[in-house]
Length: 461
Image 1 (tube, rainbow, N blue to C red):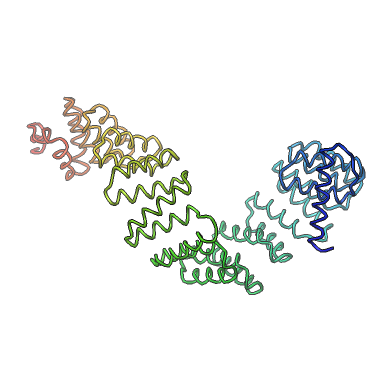
Image 2 (image 1 turned 30 degrees about the horizontal axis):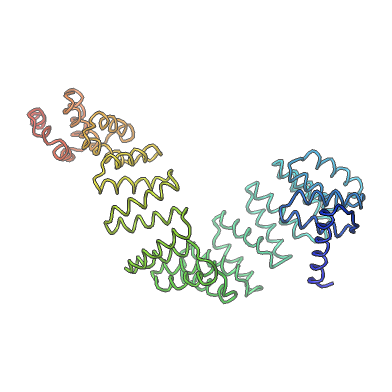
């Protein structure tokens, strides 16, 4: 029977089964028909219908091991592992040489995080099975759970040997090489694979990625070109080729490749964003803005799109628009320190000091304790007349940077303003000891203190 005929028969069985459910008329199906019906529903995620088919199937074919194995599969899916194990034990007594029993047992062990035991059971299944590719794949996945990437890779390789078009295994092999930082070994493996499968666009694409990681951009370009020759609708190859062309500063060629992807399928926010960036680098500001807008229109929740527009307007000193768009990014992800840095700096540029201080405080609250953040926030608090808050800010900063003259001179100036002469003198001496040249901070931020007789007297000592 050819495939189309087989598929047609499956559709007939499915239609007949669903008609039976609607009419409550009990119709007869052979066990293979039930298996195909159940398989279809499980693939569609329609577990309730699969359970009905299993129940009816076992009523008509009570000795069918395959139908009982589907019941096991549903038990596992519903996390009812006790029932699954009980049924498997019954099946094992009846058919101890059925590899599917071992596969399901391994599935249960895996769900219980007993991955080495699952591997041992799967290896027993290997000795019973005629078609071993899927079992090798399952063993590979278990080794991945154990972070044993060398062994995982070796088992996925066996899958690919059995089925050279098993691209899931190919991806997993390269994932293992990547995790082990073995780019050169991955390249060697892919080249050997391509010697036997020269028109495999997936392998060419992965080869390009490896060369890209090693910054061998010309070789990466060649690999992506071969991927496109193998399949001129392979969007991933055009996107990756565009990234390489950007690295080589060939922005027009990069735009061309990104644009091809827009004609092959619905526009992706990634491609639109990259086109916008290329136009900006070429000085095509109007086109850049158009594509930035298209990016966020295509995916309004893409914070990278909003931050890209923010950077564009900040660079062009249009801070009002930059502020509008950074707020969009923060609304999507308020935990990213980079966004709050832009928020704080843009508000500072606009002289919105209270909002700028709020931004810098948020950066500190998120755990970023860079010296500049403490200094700028403290200076803003000083400008707002919040001397106590500024003092507390710099005291906290000194805990992270205990011998920093920039902090000490600021604390000295603040304590002189607060008429706490003893503390002021202490911090002034520290500042002079750590880096006397930073006294300019006192002159710029606290000119009245700098000019005071007391400070001049200290300099003369």
